[in-house]
Every structure is written in structure tokens, then in C-alpha cells.
Length: 326
Image 1 (cartoon, rainbow, N blue to C red):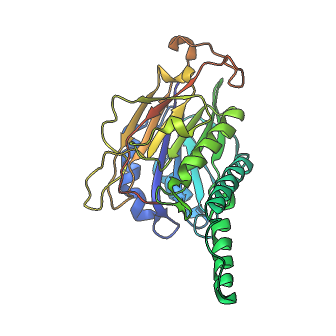
Image 2 (image 1 turned 90 degrees about the vertical axis):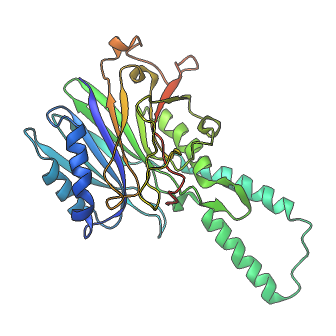
Image 3 (image 1 turned 60 degrees about the vertical axis):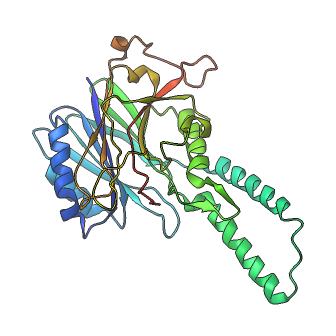
């Protein structure tokens, strides 16, 4: 039996504004999702506690089967911290959940290496002439160190689900914004290094599906930034982007995506769900994951850690160059 996954960046949703922001989003979800079959809805970019957001989602998505929810802290810095709100039903049960931080050491090492290269490139810069100038330089250096810290990025939220005998491990991701870059190396957005680090860590953790707002544009070759065995494949149904321009039109560049292990790809579907710019500057991602892998022509058990493992594949939806979010 397939498991239906929805992931939607709801642009600074919180307990006070959620009623208005969720109205059209809920209508779109109920139009796309079969509520009597296993489903999961994940809302990203939730600011504050998220309890009222979860309550509104539960009441709006209640059907013939029981509906449950959980709010998970994705961590982050003072300006980037968010919650992920999960609501699930249709016979789908939650087996595990939490923020996944195994990527952080790798990220900080990569950032430290990048910073050292920058400092070496500045070796010919003159020494400060005054103590005040030296103090300003020291303060700037501290700001750079803070900006490069993994603790300022959100963790992927990993949740395990089962429906009957089927089990699925899913990561929901909100990467650093596409405009977030280190002062010393403007050509490398944090999102690129972040993706490389989280994808490796999530693959090692046995994650089956990774979806969310990756904040990497369509013009970027996402495979170059990944240590995970993923092949980027287009979903034939997704010809538009997943964010709105400020004028309300949907753009065509790619920020939101769905990645899945290759054994699920052939029978699975990835589509977009539209609400309105009043709800969010993002459209939603819908993934119908084909759990019957025997019908996909793939082995039911694949060792992702093996050197002979079959490469995974990514089902991609488009996103907008106008979304400059954290």
C-alpha cells in the first residue's frame, strides 16, 4: 500500500496567523490526498511553539481514520530556529521522530577549511594601524565564525512511519537560504555545503525519503554538492516551480525537491500542490511512495551502506528564484 507524503514550507506560519494561512493549503491537501489511506503532512518554517498550528491541521484533516500530530524542534540559531509540524492519519502510525544532527561535525570541518583558505588569501593584507582598527577586525572575525557554525542551521527532522507491514523513514529539510553565504566566499552558499553534509548523514542513517526546501536553484547541479548516491530525475508532472514571485505568478527555478531510494522511484509519483501567495510563497510537494517494491523491479532489501548498493534517485519538483528564505 502506498504512503502519501506532503511537505509544505508555509512561510513563517505561527500559532497566531495559522487559521488564515492554512485555509487554502488544507483545501489543496484534501483535494490531492486520499485521507482514508496512509498519509503524512509536514509543515515547515513554523515559528514559535506550533501547538495551535498542529491543532488547526488536525481538525482540518480529520476523516474516517484517526489523526495525530507532533511538533518537532528543528533547532537553529536565534533567527533561523523553527519547528516542523507533522500530522498523520489514514492508518499511518509514527514510530520515531527527532532532529538529526549527525551532519554538524562534517559541516563545521568543511567551513573551517574554507575559512582557513580565505585567511591564507588575506596574508598579504596590511596589519591594522590602530588598536581601534584591530578591534574592529577582531569583531568581524567573530561574526564570520558565528555565521559559519552548523548551530545556526536547522537540523533535518527525521520521522519513522508504518502502515500495516510497511515501514518508511522520512527526513524533512529546510536548508539555509539561497542568499546565505559566507562573507569571504560569496560563490558558495551555505545550502550547497549543508546539502552535501546532511545527505551523507541521512543516507548513513538509512533514510528512505528526503523532501523539503533545499534552497538550491535549478541552474545548480545538485549532484555535485552531494556525498549521497543520488540521481536527479525530473517528474514529468512537475513543469512549474514551487514558489511564487512577488507578483503572484509561479516561477520556474528549483528550490523544493523530493529524494528517494531507487527501490521506490519507479512506482512513485511526485506532484505539486497549489494554494496561493496569501498562504505561503511556496507551493506544496506531494509524493505518493510506492511501498510494493517487488512491482518496481527492484530488490526489496538494498544495503545503502554497501559499496555495491544501487544508486538512489531523486524525484524533483521545480522552485522559484524569487524565494530568498532562511
